[in-house]
Amino acid sequence: MLSLKNTSTPHATRSGALIALALMLAACGKQGATLGEGSSEITGSAGAAGAHQAHRELMKCDAPVATLALVENSNGYTVSSSYNLPSSPVPLIRLLAQQSGCFRVVDRAAGLKATIKEQELKDAGILRQQGSTVHKGKGYEAQYSLTPSLSFSEQNAGREVGGLMAQIPVLNKFVAAAEQVKLKEAQVALLLTDNETTEQIAAATGSVRVTDLGMGGLVVGKLGGAGGAGWANSNEGKVIAAAFLDAHNKLVVQVRELAARDLPPPVATKSGNKG
Image 1 (tube, rainbow, N blue to C red):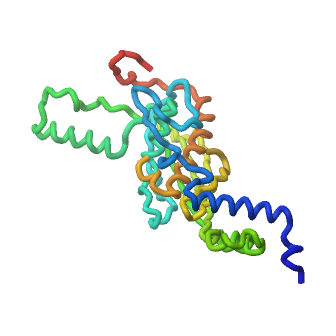
Image 2: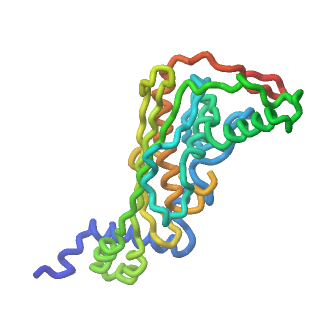
Image 3: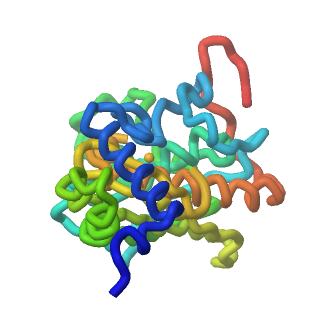
C-alpha cells in the first residue's frame, strides 16, 4: 500500500493550497470573486440617456437594427423553485437588449396589458376622450422576437475536495469547510426569429460555471464568457445572469451583420436629439 507521503504530489499540494486559500478568504469575508458586489452582472439602466452603468463587457451596436419583443419560453426554464429566483429571465434580457442599442424593445408583457386596460377604460367612457395617451393603431409591431432558454444545475463537490485535502497534513483542518463546496453551472440560449418570415436568423449560447465555497465566496470559471431584481439576491441568480450576458454578447456579433429595418421615429427627448 502506498503511503500518504508518496501519494501527495507537489501538484496536488499546490491545488489543495489554492483551495484552502480560497476557503480562508471566504471565511474572512474576502471573496475570490464578487459578482457585481451585491448586484448581478446585468445592471444599470437603459433609455433616452443611453446605457447607464451597464456591464463593462456588454457588447453594443452602433444603431438599432429592428424592433424586438421578448417571448417567454413555452417549455419553461429548468431551475429548481428552491432557489427562490424570479419565475422568468425575460426582464433581465430586455434590459440587456435595450442597453446594447441593437434593438428598439417593444413590450408584450405587463406593459402591453396596461395599455390594453387603458384602451378599455377609454372605450367605456371612463377616461377623457381628448386624452393623448391611448389611440388605436399607434402601437409598434415587433419585427423580431427573441426567445430565451435556461438550464441550471448544481453538484455537491465538497466530498471530493475534502477527500483531497484530508490527505495533506497542512490542509486537513479545512476539510469541514471544503465539504460545503458546490459547483453551480448555468447553460442558456437566445434564439432570434424574423416575425415576417418566421426564419430563425440568429442563435447564441452562454454558459458560466462557478465554485460556491458555501460561505459567501464564489470562484468563477467561465465556460464561454463573462451575473435585475431578484437575480442579485443569490449566487444562483448571479450565475444565470452572467450566462445570459455571455449569450447576449455572442448574439450581438451576429446582429451587427443584419441590415437595419425601417424603424419608428425615435423617442422624443428634452434636447430634441434623435437616434
